[in-house]
Image (cartoon, rainbow, N blue to C red; front, side, top):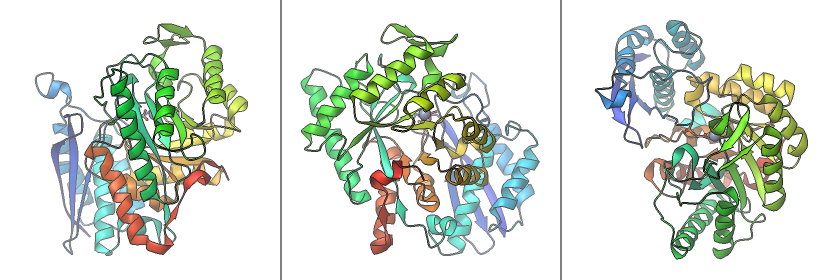
Length: 424
Ligand code: PGA
Ligand code: ZN
């Protein structure tokens, strides 16, 4: 049973405060979880409670969320069975009483939800991925590695937020990490040689002063080739334009490039990129408020490109069901803090999998050293994980955890590889 629940304020990878929760069970087992935070958030995400006092932390304080855990939530969950995750999460949702978790804060609630799961795994003497996924949990995810940062994650002119590589030809997760690292360092060399800065953005990818997606994609392609890999065959390309961020008044406003595109022109542009480059997946190709655009693009290229909904679904099962019903994409991004409890995030994964959609487990741009999502990727067998670049410990911590899991699984470990992108 849960004995104590304690929250504290720690720092995330951008140097902003976030919530960390310790849950201790009667048998002494400890579970600890830290909550991530996004920069390009969807409008329908569960509400992250911030203090809003401009004199402290520039308004981003989490003292109220911490106090909610230490006070009301701790009192409500003390004595509960930690093995009953669904019951715990339902109790947290009921205690909050709002549809968006805005009263207690999704950051407060998620910290407790994840810390309880981790404590229960410890009490069972099991790693988290096995506690949640059972003996069948042996699939290591294909990593989407974000090596060029733009949009809200960097101060350069790139309108698109993320340019990623996926080592589809790797045999193991550890080999995928090696391939990614080699391309990352080759890209660094190429950028330097071209006179570009090699400083990195929020997710550890380079943030050079490039203007167009083509310029970024060309650099990435050259780096794949320069590292000795075949673009498309060994390593594919993935983009997250985060299109909601630059969709204004019905138009896609590429401010960095200095071009405005109508939804049809934006879709034509993306289609041309898919035709010209070995792009296997695009996340948020269209804005969360442009569902017509989403449906049209899905009908047009959905059979040859994974189209993953992030802002449009916000890991919300109800929004996802509607998207599945109406043909909005063919894949869902899962960020536990977008919805606020582990149970709800797992329900979203299950709904997607039942519909034959692919699932990408994901970090946030503001992360911590917490590696829970690595275990969740294996526990759900979702086959894909997005957790940033091959630099910065907030990103590499997740890769390192998966290297450990692959080693622990030994001969039973399977690497998802290219098959992860195929829909059932
Ligand atoms: P965020 O962005 O964590 O800053 O919201 C990540 C993404 O758009 O996938
Ligand atoms: Zn996204």
